[in-house]
Amino acid sequence: MPREPESFASQAGWQSGNPPPKAPTLAEIEQELVGALPPASADRLIRLARPAIGLWPQRPRPDPPVRASRLGGMPYAPPEWPWPIYETEPMLFLGHLNCADLQGLPGAETLPSAGILAFFGDHDAVTGCDFAFGSLAAVYYWTDIDRLAPATPPIEIECVFPLSELAFRPLIDLPHQFSRAVEEILTDGEESSRYFEIRHAAILHGIPDDVRSYCGFSKLLGWPNLIQHDLDCIGDPADPNGFRLLLELDEYSNGTDSEGWGPGGSLYFLIRDADLRARRFDRCEFEMQCT
Image 1 (cartoon, rainbow, N blue to C red):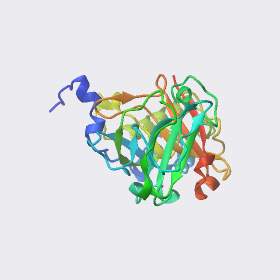
Image 2 (image 1 turned 135 degrees about the horizontal axis):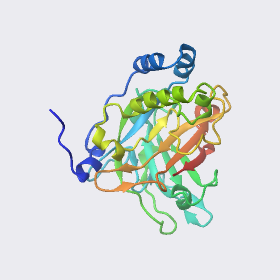
Image 3 (image 1 turned 90 degrees about the vertical axis):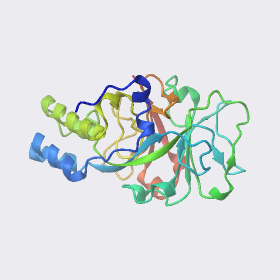
Image 4 (image 1 turned 180 degrees about the vertical axis):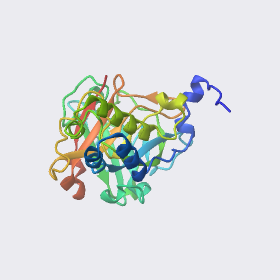
């Protein structure tokens, strides 16, 4: 029986009102690549596959636990923690992730097993008004989470993003077709188009057609979903000193309110493998792209 059309409110709130669907397995993705591309190209692409953890926004409970993984709202932080400042303005709180929530998910073994990762960004940077890099964002790793308390900025901040709790969607992630890693393998336009369709279908797997444009695809780890071109920091995927994706934040909705980054934008936090192993999240680099 055909699925009845849904109202705009139902479509916009579908993601936050439903658990994440199961994503394709590595074997299923490999089967699609082998069937659509020359064997050598398919083999090289499947070797680039990385585990990722999709961040699936959910409607917040009336009083979510302090340690609950979330986007938006206001942060809870250690009592002595100084709020990050860019120039003279407090940075905006983007969200925090409880690493204990991630245990057992693909790729989580590279992350801390406990503690909170908190992400902040300058207002102009996250809204697409300033495309400079580096100090426009900040990442904190808090291990003493028993003392977390409501944090107050030194002066009033420009905005507070909508609060959304998070569920998690295990993923097998392939590099974007605009990435240098893929462009080195696929030089034929038709093959690139077939690869795009396979990757796109894997991301949207299990999501009804009529709500796909209302869903966000934020994630930990994996490969960045690119909007314009490859990220400046990302280099050879085999380079142990190169940057890789730590966190991507896309548009999201909590079922009532939505938030996005510039027109159709995404925020990217990047980290080197050595810094990830050393838990030096303060060394992350930040980039932003929008349409």
